[in-house]
Figure 1 (spheres, rainbow, N blue to C red):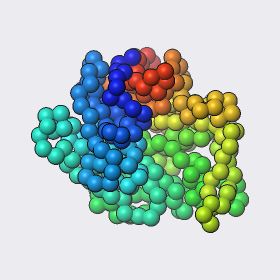
Figure 2: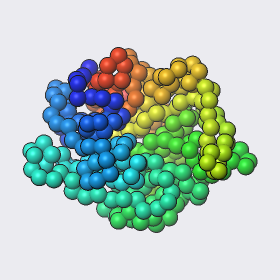
Figure 3: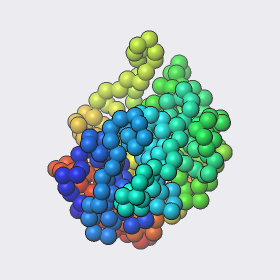
Figure 4: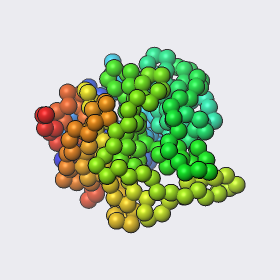
Length: 311
């Protein structure tokens, strides 16, 4: 264990930035915690619940941005916030460098800053697997094939069933989606073209039905819905996918936690499987691929660390 303390409420995601770990939380009272990687020392919490500057409704992803910055994505507001972590720790004025709202009625679920002028998102789109935005948050176009679906299933419903976490190659020329309800990893180039699809050892797909809610079709699932890759991280030439493999019926209340990590290369080939000694909700990997960090909820919220084996 690296850190366990009262600062953690219901931690959601984790990211590695220089000498720190950034851990997102349900934003009551704070949305983000900064922990020192070397020894797990708690340094600071920041971000309130709300819709204004420095406020979050949810905080699902943390992306290192260089020069001590990190992009934080709030799907509740479709907003990316660039946080200056050294300024935050020093208490040197407003630590928010920039905010970008994704201006499209597409329900973007996850988003990454891919370059100085490009954002990439996945969501409940009618066309294309990915949406590409300009640096001001304006939609440029969607790209990539829609997920496989039975005849008559609306595209947005299939997108919901195949939703997942994005991860960006260090070169920023490739992006991957780890599917939440399948052991499936999709890899796209910088233009949004699908170039590879990797599969886990079981090769299962989402189990769902279409249900009308509020006059619109929606995804409906039950106890047989299985969880696949509940989180995804990239480091070096590898993708690290946190894997559950359990259905709600098999693990009531805990199916969305992963007990092992599947390591893929960027051609979609499964290279190895790493067991965990706990159930984790999220993961991050150090850039040198020496350390794996995970977020645990039970028996108490904590940040865990373990050394990664060399190939």
